Length: 219
Image 1 (tube, rainbow, N blue to C red):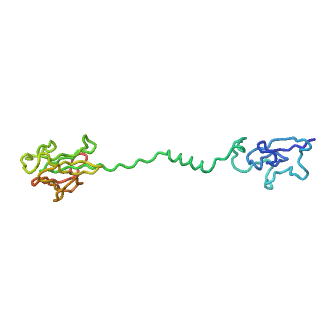
Image 2: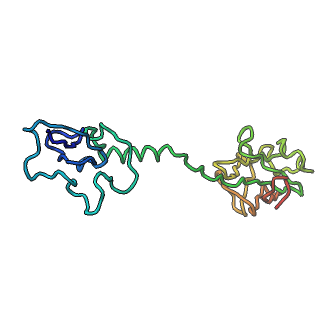
């Protein structure tokens, strides 16, 4: 009568040791051994283990798999090439690159106005047509609400302009005869201004820069 042995169905000849009892392969740890009846010349030589597989702890029932969950049998696991560590790292990096990134916080909106002869002239926001800003002069529509402005002979008809550059407010003289001043100093080019600065157009128009809220009232 031929001896019944059990061997690994996925291992190459001579790669996995056979066993005389049903159990799992010592090389492919979660691969169950299959029944095999070899011819007499294929029977294991005398002294070959036919009982408990090598490496099975004493007291462990034969055929009992190691502790822990048993994954599904994958016949191609032994022949599938392992993914290189570099590929795995690149795959993780690609997953991280596709994660949504937090949006940067928007800077607070700066709202400014000029106090001209007791009249509050708001500076148009940067997103408005023409880039916003404010024009100063006797013939400028932006100054039409200022009383007595037309009688100021020192002020040019198109004297200066306030405009936004990258979220900051600048004042620029438009080639007036009597100049534009910031905190008492005559400017030669676009000059950045903000709340608290005092402007003077020509010799007779003093202006203060103030911050206003969303309702147009001074803060």
